[in-house]
Length: 232
Image (cartoon, rainbow, N blue to C red; front, side, top):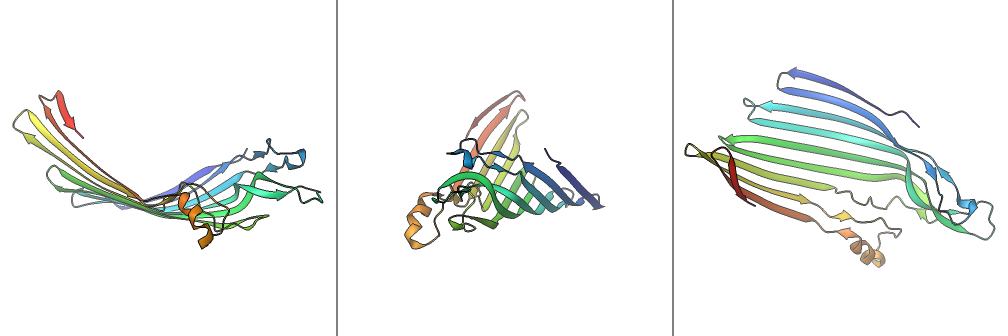
């Protein structure tokens, strides 16, 4: 059990501009290592708690033909739950096991931006981007300092571009065109317990997904206000 909350403050200096600040708290439940190799490793772990803080800007300009959204945030995670190697309590034989425990602290910082612009009648373009910087502040176990380890599934860089165009064809038809491109940087597919040195380069490469870009497009024709034929 635990308390979570969200609190925010909004301010509109004009009808078309919004400034805001927000803070929130959340948690992941604690538990026990029920699949431990022996009773000595049935060690409970505490809840993981996250505190986040965000500031942002939302604005519309040029008679609402341009929309800009900006945000920056930081999240601090305490008692982060990770797989750790621990020694058996009271053991003189050096017995150890890998269990889920409270490994330490982590910090996530990021910025996001979104822009939508009506460049001409029927033509809208969009752009967005995200940067995230994850970092362990404290993380260690019997193997030593593990703060160098990566965060699996976290894309540090992402951006996307898109365009839509729509125009009438005569009195009863309309053509719609769309194109988009999305890119994200390389991503760790898994964590690893190996220091980042040349001897472990193959392990790091094998557990890293390459950067990827996706290009898409769609064209369609609407007619009689009831039917549409499209290719994509």
